[in-house]
Length: 115
Image (cartoon, rainbow, N blue to C red; front, side):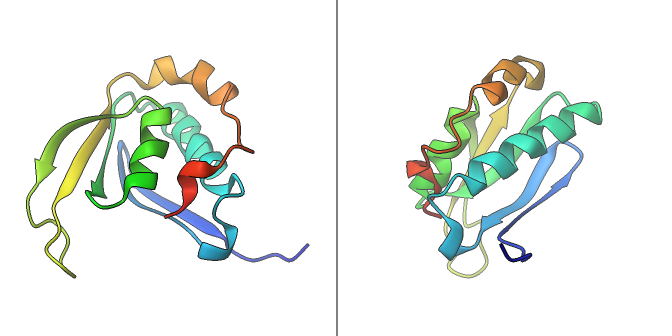
């Protein structure tokens, strides 16, 4: 066991600004666990609607977000500065409904974490 940062999430109230897992720790459940705990924390702070942007090419991340109940609600054209890629805007409309889902997330089934 080593103490190192293997993932991070940054959010501003009800918006996930950044979410990442180190490549060496993907497909091990780290991302699902981190994201689930972040949603629990957002809810404890009083958040009810959560939004985020994700690259259109990042299919694994989109799959993960859908597992938590997020849905595409829009597109931001040329959102990413590095390559001008478009982003999907994902939103979770009622975080209160996610509590049961978080309790039943299978953190060992990590096919959707390859981002």
